[in-house]
Picture 1 (cartoon, helix red, strand yellow):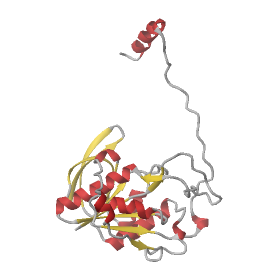
Picture 2 (cartoon, helix red, strand yellow):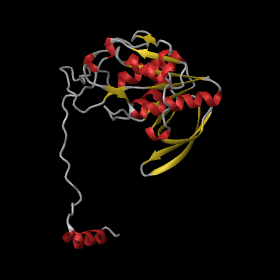
Picture 3 (cartoon, one colour):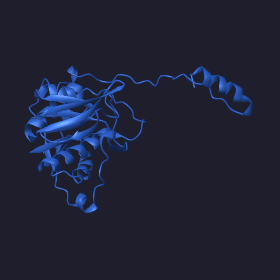
Picture 4 (cartoon, helix red, strand yellow):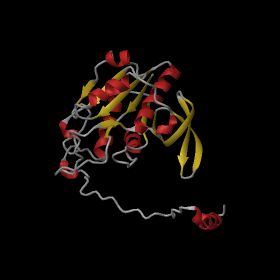
Length: 252
């Protein structure tokens, strides 16, 4: 039995521009593994260890994603897959979901773990879209787990509540970074990590319509809205009376 985790390389800075196609400019920008995805890789490894199977990790990225895969496959995974094709650059939610669902059909895992959202996109829509395309069960916003196997017992965040959920595989599970602490990759394991299997858009079953730029959603503008301070900053010994009044007003 096999588990699969998807991981994404995201910019390590907010100083990222947008090119004339509405895509983030990633060249020359330092990147790292999306935090939620690191937890997904760990959970995939734990699932494989629990059932006596193997874990795989995959990414959709340009050539620079190869180094990330070497590090991640050394964290308890047996194989890695690199979805790499210039036609996938600037993929929107729909194209990304179709590509990842195509990868699942190739890799043939029993369960897929994904980060609940990406640091550069924050939509949180790709995991449920992948599950819908596959026709699999879906559990999102997972914060902790109790049992891993053909039946998973998970805790998920629902607004301000935590709900205990049981689901049978095949399933897609999206997790927050708090669900598990990623293990540290051994240096020798990284050096001896197997080469990733490269998969292009054609093998993923994507059509010309899927890859048509004119049909994609794209970023046309980004802004950073001003945030008004909600609380006062009180300073100095003379502000003690104001502080006590403020605390009383908050019911403290």
